[in-house]
Image (cartoon, rainbow, N blue to C red; front, side, top):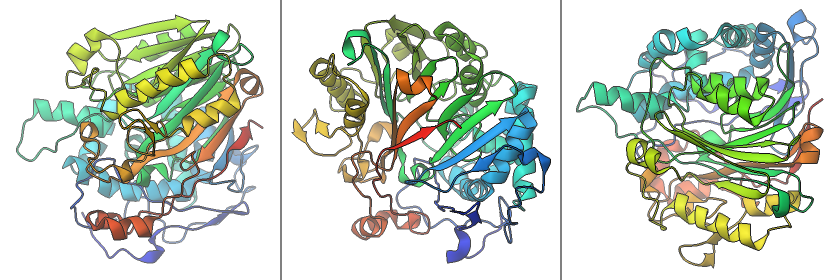
Amino acid sequence: MKSSALLPSLLLVALLAGAVFLSRPVALARVAAAAPTAVIPPEVGAAAALLPVSATSDARLAGSFRHPAENGWIYVHLQGSPATLGFQHGYWLAPEIGKMLRIFHVSIPHATNKPWQFFRDAAQNMLLPHIEPEYRQELEGIVAGVRARGVNADLDDIIVLNAFEEMPDYYVPWYNRHHPSAQTASLHAPGNCSAFIATGSYTKDGKIVIGHNNWTNYLNGENWNIIFDLVPSHGQHLIMDGFPGVITSDDDFGINQSGLMITETTISQFNGWDPNGIPEFVRSRKALQYATSIDDYIAIMLKGDNGGYANDWLIGDRKTNEVARLELGLKHHRVWRTKDGMLVGSNFASDPALIRDEAPDFRPNDLTTSPNARHARWEQLKRQYKGKIDIALGEKMEADHYDTVTHSIHPSEHTLCGHADLAAHGIPQWDWPPYYPGGTVQAKVADATMAEHMSFMASMGHPCQTNFDAAKFLKQHPEYGWQKPYLEDMPGRPWTKFSAK
């Protein structure tokens, strides 16, 4: 791998459609605190000089656009055939995609002790054969789009980018078990996000309300700021938050035209992978695009399950006012459904069989861990706000700072709005060391009326509006100095309404 000095100009700042691109770096969640400063090589995702935008230069851009950034979010409208959707995606988000590829090229190998080529080979030989033509065409379109802007990437790079949630944390541990070596990294599937879905007597108007906040490291989370408004030539119009270059939401929050409202939280300490399965990023995108009922959604997620990015899915159907929770492992899955209740997620597993066989290190009765402490808080809020839940309360709950371990109001690793950078003991279940720069990085809330109009509320940064000061943090915690070239301030921003165009 080539190395070069990291110049301040590395972080791309480009003007596109009158918008200033927010250039933010990325690294994997679990990187050794004492690691040396990584140097981003020039060859992957690089553009010597990003080519200027010419919205009329290519017919494939017709009808698509990118809005100027609003309260930290970048809004893109994409429409057309799979290849056209992909081209528009790659073209409008080329600076962000190029930056992600360059940083992942360093951070993924650093976290896993596997070279970038290992992941490219897996993308080509293991994942690509199980990506159906529609989504392969869309991924190829992204490649064409970024190359049209002068960014160096190929299909293998884009597949690795799309699988950044499932390959390092699910495939690599499986691979290491089958190929033991002293050089293998210790990797455990993370448990990120706090989410709820409520209906019936639990909400103010008796209709569905859904909310989610995204937990990850701040390096990743500062980039999870795309609002995708997608109108595919097949399937349904959908709106979702997302990550540049990735065809699914990936944290996952989305609404489709048929009335489905979905989100999820990851299952902590999950173990499982099927190399012959369909990638999770394909199944989750297909489910949001084609499902018209809860049953449809579950069936699509189950078919070809590869065990990657194992989640508890919260699914609502505004047409029937029913909500469901799908706990999806590899060997086991279980579904809870109701038209009068509140279902929650905070990275805990519930099915005893799944815990026994696929998450044996998860301790459901240890109330001091982040997943269980937040689960306890959800149960308190469920009782406290029954019959009152609406958009305003959804926003309030996703920003909640009550710690059920210390019985105090103080942001921490135990609170629904997470602040692991304040955690003296870290989160060992996820391999997060003390004062790890991670936690809640954004949040979304919607009700059935908003879903009918293809809209939702979103807050970039901590939804509690607390600011993260990168320079101050690094001065206080020099053990994370290796992140200095990448870590940026993460200001708390107001809730903003986004609607499909």
